[in-house]
Length: 123
Length: 140
Image (cartoon, rainbow over all chains, first blue to last red; front, side, top):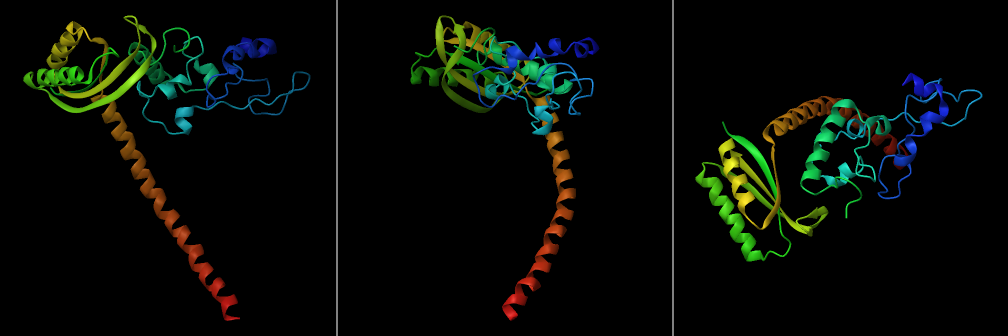
């Protein structure tokens, strides 16, 4: 984490494959990786570097109080699956650890019953 | 030790309705004969599969909620594996998850009750204050 914050270019890179997808309008916007700039996420823009505001990421399940992460709810799970079919890491989505754990289990179950693809887009 | 399970299975898309009814009824008798109970059967209908399964691109999804022991599930899964029309199935134990959800729900309800009472008082207060204010212009 600390290494990422030192180099601004490297913090931006992981966001690109996930952040700019076309499918699904209601996907949460995934900001850059890491813990934001030196001034901290949500803080004033640091001097010298790029001046852009990075919103602090919050867990979708905590804020919307979604208690049940079910494998049948493939639309919800689809928001946390990249175009390639991968589970999006929580450093990009902002999902908290206990929810990410349950999310991963649900996605794997959904894959098993052909609700979500193992790889690639849903045919 | 009775447990609640959720059994989701996919049958081939070209299966006739009568055959499907027969299959579901057959599975039901399998469950009941093994001292289990079928609580719910939900036919979710035809859906496109996320990937090809046995050269099919779509399938008919059926969801069963079953209460019983592990032996019920064992027998049921064996039968599903043998049945040619069933192309995929998944069994998930849901009772513990349900217990957790009920706990959260109870917790939220209790919190709501506590927060609802002061909110009701606050709501009443402006309503009382408003009525004289509304009367004044009417009186004038």
